[in-house]
Image (cartoon, rainbow, N blue to C red):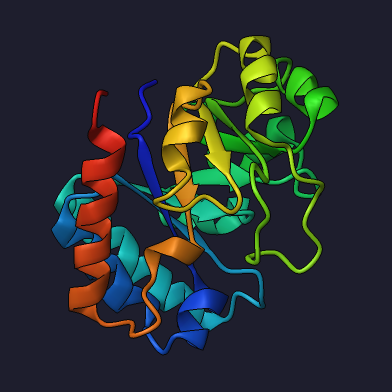
Length: 213
């Protein structure tokens, strides 16, 4: 598969802190032309959250963008979405029993051992990080770093997403080190977070990541 070089993440905690509803942020990102969009919700997936996820799934279908649900195989199946799993979630093989054998599946790794182990898993792409210091996780894994990313890149032939602390200032380092895509949370959402400001920031990100691709 081919991953878009810009992989925006709708992190519900970050958006709540900045006063922007997830569906509004999704509209802004899709208006900017993003081709993949992940919903990351670490709290209880209640009815309201599910309804919001359904709205975002519909918006992605209308825009021709891939919608990805973080962690929850059951929600991904219900919304006909792709799924992204972490190391503490269902094993990919078990998750596919829920989502189906043809569903798209991503998988997070945080070090050489996990990245090597991912080659035996039934996944379509892998993420590696945090590449830089990140504030999006309460207890982040140790920083991988750009040079380690470069060294580990040949381990897997699958598309690789760099994640963790990536900004407009350092994203090119991760891409030049071998990442196919960069996943963005913190630097995607301005502190004065509006539909217009998110769209403008996303357009900036797309221009940056598409350069020389």
